[in-house]
Length: 205
Image (tube, rainbow, N blue to C red; front, side, top):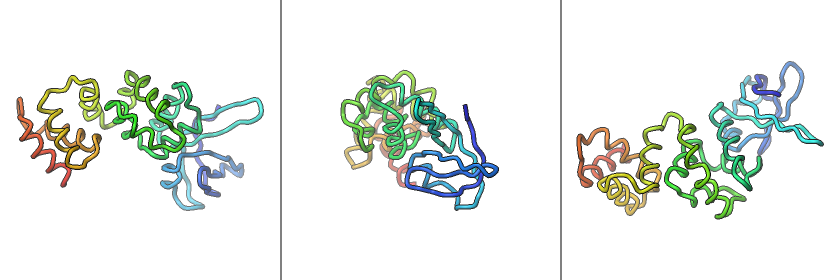
């Protein structure tokens, strides 16, 4: 199995690239987020690779980081999610966005991806709830708070502050991330008004 490729970008398509590795051109399928972050043609790049072997084909899927590849694998553990749907989700949402959507049980965020209906989105946020924290990456503290909010176990001052920010037009992810950061500055047992004020400063910054 191929787990990583380092080579020269030879061609770039909408959802794939050809990577020249010592004269051999590998066709690698990628999320559009990955494609948009590629260097120019002729430059070197390393990609984490997921290899899918079928009776009639071998397909390579490329990712900028091992974490993105891990999310690709995890998403496909959900019934109804294959490689195409997983890439569509990763094209629409970053790894942090996916983790936040699962933590907040926000199936609408997942359903923004092309080809992902409400039922599949619902299964993703439900079935991956207990698995997602390990894939939350650098935003682990924010994801932890969002999980508490999604499960209804966050303090009332926190949920009130997040609700206030969402009522102002911010997304649930933006609001919960801002309040998570505000909590670090608010001291012990902060009131919702203080959290709202600090959260707005985070969003303005």
